[in-house]
Length: 208
Image 1 (cartoon, rainbow, N blue to C red):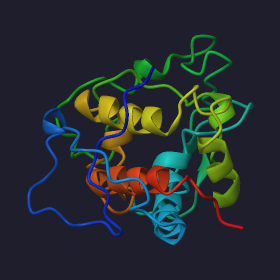
Image 2: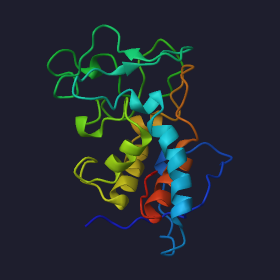
Image 3: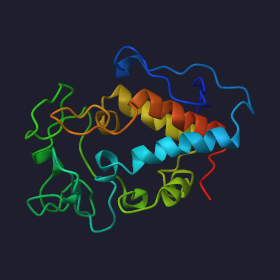
Image 4: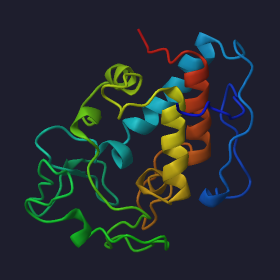
C-alpha cells in the first residue's frame, strides 16, 4: 500500500528563496479533503502540462521507435538525437550503444554546453507507455492518471516517484537545473511537485 501524499497544497506555485536541496525534500501533512477544487486542480495541470511537454522532459519520453530527441543549446528546433542513436527495446541502448556510454552518472554540476548531461541515476528513455513527445497535454493527462500506463502508480505514487528521483538527484530533478546553457523545464522542481500534489488532491482532472 503506497503511503498517502503528505504535502501542503497551494493553489499556485510559490517561489523559494534558496535552491532546492534534493536530500532535504520531506512530506508535510496531507491537505484537508475537499480543500482543493477541480478548478484549482485544472489550473495546476496547466502548469504541469508546460513541464511535461517541454523538450527538457519530452525529449526522452518518446515512442516505440526508441529514438531520443535533441533540442540543442541556443536552438528551439527539436530533432532526432545525433549519431543515429537508438535506445532499442531495452530503452537503455543495450542493443546498440548504451546511453551511459556518453551520459555520465554524476551528482556534480554540469556547466559545459557540449558535455553530456549528468544525473544521479542511470540514463534511459522513459517506458514507451509513457510517451510524451508529440502528444497533447490532454492525452498526457489521461496517461498520468492511468496506472496501466504510468508505472502502476496512484496519485500518491506519482508524488513518491518525484521525491525519490529528487533524493537521488535524478533525471527528473536535473531537467529543472540542466546547466550548460540548456533551457530548464519551467517553474522549478519544488513548484512542479506542489502542482502535481494539487492536481492529485483535486481529483486529477484533465482538460476537456
